[in-house]
Amino acid sequence: MILQTAANLKTNPAEKMQRAYVSYSCGGECRLAASENIPEEKSPADPLYAPLQADLFCLSHSYNPGELLTYIVTLRNRGTSPLCSLEITDNLGAWAPQGVSLHPLSYEGPLRLYVEGCFVSCISPACISGETAVFSILYLAPGAEAALVYRMRVTEKAPLAAGSEITSTVGISAENLPETITASHTIPVRAFAPLQIEKAVFSPKTGDGAGRYKHVYTLYNPGLQPVERAVITDDIGASWDTRIISVFLNGLEIPPEEYCLRHGKFTFPAPGASREITVPAAEICLNPEGNLESRPGSLCVEAVVEK
Image (cartoon, rainbow, N blue to C red; front, side, top):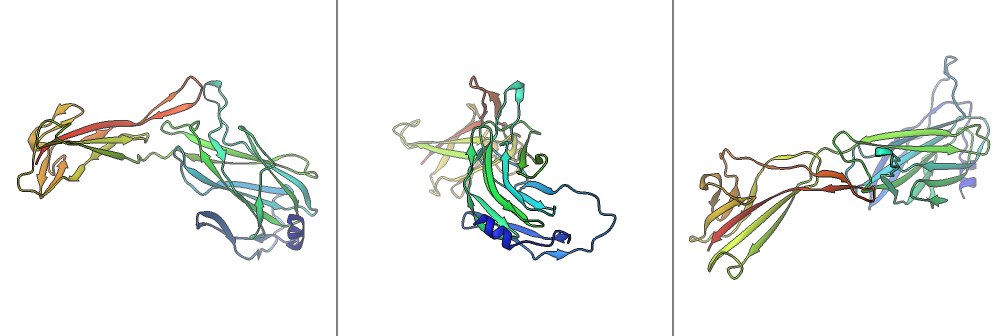
């Protein structure tokens, strides 16, 4: 199927072409569309080029642990003869902290092959190991352009410290290609913190006494930077006799002017209060197995409510 499609979509190798691409997500799948080729007037000053031109880029501008990333490899045969038995090898973003070789990406698939902007088929990897993912294409006609679209998941082995990056590299070889062609792409770790909150309510039987409830709020920060000016709000009841007895931040009691209860809504810190809540950043460490672990920063707020 690939051999036939590529052959039918030949272009004139002597003619330099330009094509625009748009990548998008639809129904949970990553797709690619391309414009028509636009001939460009050939200039005698054009530089020499290799028979195969390869580029790699990622649709995401940054990454976080566990995130799915979409990569696109574009291949263009700029020679005058077809390229046969192409093999594309992705190194899964290999890096070596403290001399230990780690691979922060894992192949998720599926890989979708496009030739001249038209979808051809999904391709299964010829080989997947913990260190590489290898794909094969039978044929690429002279002047033809192919795009491989696939997904990678960021693993627990990804660098997460502030300023870290993942650099992915693909190598492309072919039967009649004199040397392996490589292409690389680098994306940084995302700095923002996706703050999370958990709430628990203890009834009078397990709380501080009859009619008193303990509302416990735990904030988690899995990000790599502290989260500042966090504000907790909770509708705890609009009854006229509902009141807050005390509030604790990480076990330390907070003065009443630092929180408020208005129309049944608990707010901490209160509007205009001098206090600010800062949730510390996650801690990154290397476990005994040689894998990086992220421990979210956290803080706890307890409000004793009487109803």
